[in-house]
Image (cartoon, rainbow, N blue to C red; front, side, top):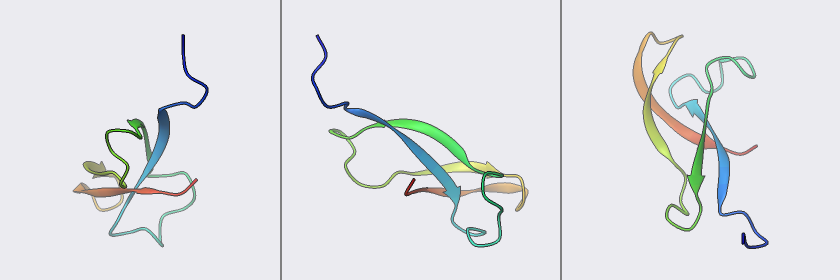
Amino acid sequence: MAKGKDVRVTAILECNIRKSVISYYIGRYTTQKNCRNTPNRLELKKFCPYCYKHTIHGEIKK
């Protein structure tokens, strides 16, 4: 049986270079992470459609 608190949560990733310029939902990625294994914020290299290259996308608050 599952425990009361969910271990896997949905994380939203946004480009670190153009964070203030991008409109609300365009250019964001969603993924899931395990809070027990990775308590810190995620940083993954993803393709940014505005920069038109692969950049580092960091986890943001919901």
